[in-house]
Amino acid sequence: MPIAELFGQQEAVKKLDGELLSGTLSHAYMIWGPAGSDRWRLAMALALAANCTGREGADASREGLWYCGECSNCTKLLAGVHPDFAVVRPDGKVIKIDQIREMQSRIALRPGEARLKTWVIDDAHTMNEESQNCLLKVLEEPPGHALIMLLLDEPGALLPTISSRCHSIRLGSVDRESLVEWGRRELGMSAERAAVLAAVSSGLRGKMERLARDADYFKVRNAIISRARSVMWCGDGGLALTTSEKLLDMLKRSSGGARGAARAGIADEASGDAIDGAAAEGAADGAAGALDGDIAGWQSGEDDDASETAAISTPEGACEVLAVYMRDVLAKSLGGGPDVLINIDLADEISADAERGRPEQFRRWAEKCMSTAEALAANANARLALDDLMLDLALLLT
Ligand SMILES: [Zn+2]
Image (cartoon, rainbow, N blue to C red; front, side, top):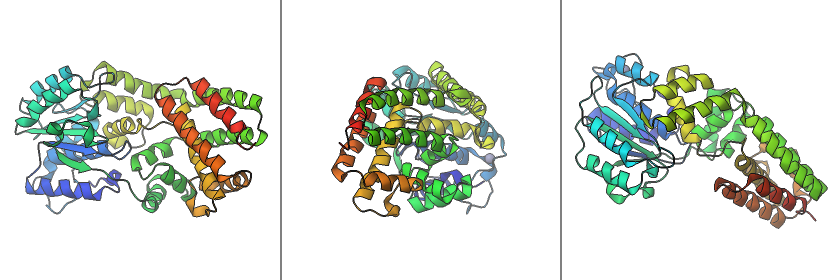
């Protein structure tokens, strides 16, 4: 079964394929790249390929981390109920030493059904020093049947003693044209929408897929931009403050609903029992209505992976939308053609705005949007931050 979802990560897949076929798989991997870069999917694909009994006697030239999808190990891994597979996630903000101790004692036992006892440590950078030192003991003398995968943004976040004991698998970004083509082919998107999402996703396939699955993405984006444009064109401080309030109301409404509730369910499961199989996540994901029914266990993990990037229906996400839009206005005011635009479907609005001001004004406000997003990520008061941003926008062209 080929893993189409690992689109764009051929280099990593090829390396792991080679190790699997030659029997030189390592006991520990560090799979790293930005959120949305498919690190969770790669980890699941390796777990499947490494434990699939259908591979035995199969044509060794089968590539792409091939697995049969039908043997007992594949079926249980895909359903998120395999007893020899477990995930460690932060308990609160950190992965605590008790979680690693539990892993240490459980991974020492021989696998009951699979070939390997497989552990995924998600957000591995959240291990505190104690946890990392405990993990170090496992990595110094890993059981022969252990496969440990650490998922994180950057290896620099780990103690060198840990990172040096793990094989490094880096996941890169995918070029924009390939992502557009992928979005049209696999997600059935129009070329224009695929181009917008590929650009907004900065080459991260997982992020693009998450945005594409958000049926309201374009509606919410348009509403945010349209309200902000009114403030900029009217230059009215009163309108700026009511817009800030209305924006927050709208974001609250669009982040609610059934899917929001299902996602909250996932979060509750994860915080209630930080070391577990993927069963609870698979079930919660079913409630979230994942399109890929056969890979329910993966999809929820990918959601976790991508949730580190701000969703559009949050004040932080709205600031990012506005920063990207203003960056388009800036590019246009500097004489750029349509090919430099991210919001390519809003070319007319961007041109009209670009004619009303000067590049330095647009640049300054785009930067303010980004610094506001950062402040919100650090728990700034959303109402005050948006009021300030909108008031500044009202004065932008004066
Ligand atoms: Zn199989």
